Amino acid sequence: MDIQLSELLDFLRYPSISTDAAYTDSVSECAQWLYQKFESMGLKTEVHGTPGHPVLVAKNQHRSDRRTVMIYGHYDVQPVDPLDLWISPPFEPRIENGILYARGAADDKGPILAHIQGVAEALQRDGDLPVNLIFLIEGEEEIGSPHLGQFLHDHRDELRRDVITLSDTGMVAPGIPTLTYGLRGIACIELKVTGPAIDLHSGIYGGAVANPITALAQMLATLHDTKGRVLVDGFYDGVRPLESWEKTAWAKLPPADPSLLALTGSPELFGESGFDSRERLWARPTAELNGIGGGYQGEGSKTVIPSKAFAKLTFRLVPDQSPEEVLKQVRAHFEKVIPPGVRLEIEAGHVGSPYLMDPNSVFGRAAQRAAQRTFDHEIALIREGGSIPIVNTFREVLGVESLLLGLTLPDCRAHSPNENFPLENYQAGIRLNQALLQELA
Image (tube, rainbow, N blue to C red; front, side):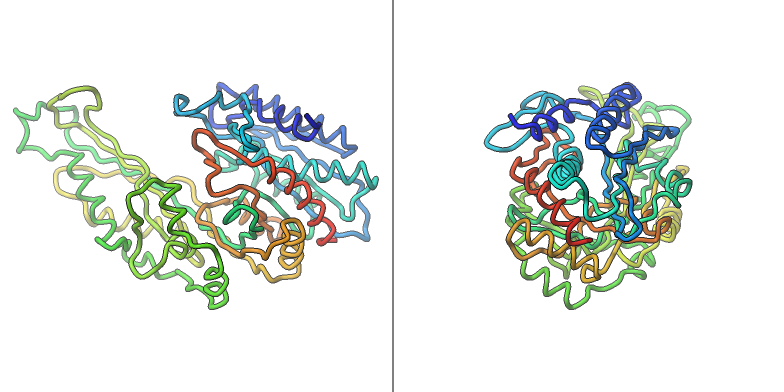
């Protein structure tokens, strides 16, 4: 086994789950592993403590006559539940038919270590890099990077650079290099509906008091029409229409519907009327119900009117929607449709703005050339439906754009059991890193 693969397996064995305090020591040990790796490469490395998990900054020797490039990534991972659906233990990496299975393999340990190995290989071969390089690796991306924004503010001067690159996105299909130039934003909210002070006997009190679950269901039913359009007043006011060049570029991509059906296992696709699947995923906003609860959840029957019910929702947003404005609109909508007999509490969660950059800028063109050199294939220019709020923070605090060059495939199962990453893409990521730094120089 070569050293590049061996180190990836070692990296993946750390259960660096940032959201669970039980794994705090493992997260710190994973950060220390990265520190040792950077130091072994000859990079000047610092581990910065935060109120949460550590941030690592590693640099080569900087020169005034070179461009400065930051490579961002994260070493924390998602929880592994449900554990019984994993074919093999999530922190015991398994290789089968050239595919590496482990939690974090795709998101983001495989891609970020590919960049690190690309730099290590170039330094060993050439003794230097064509650019001034900064690695910024955090341990809280999977919980929304709550402390990275302040870290960027506090270290803004020493983190000056010309462009940022990361590979926390995907490819449209095997072998097709992919530059993601847009991401949807996000706004989270929780509804809490309360009725009686305690759970009540549904026979004795049913018909005389309102049922919070029924009330919540009625409220949620007002969120969409039957064709998938969101019915919140003003929700679509800020939506920027697609440019003609985007429609042309997306039309060249492999058909989306067959793979979506295969990957999701859904009996058929559904979404906002008047748009195809890619437009719905990449360029249209959504309102999604992520969780709902209330009342008896055990086996058999328990005839109660529950005292409370809740629902968790997220809204994926596109340029030029404002997360704060959307939350105001959503709050007003639900306050307008509260049924009688219950009280409503609305609690806003985290937000992130949509991101859009020009893929044909100077650095965007450099990224396209590097990706085409690596994969020997015409590049796909896409937006993605997910959210990476930190890229907007980079733009706001550091004043630069981010190049999102994906390495994972649509079936990588990030955040799910049996997360996976092709070893072929790991090696391609190493080559991509070297081609990218040359092109950016």
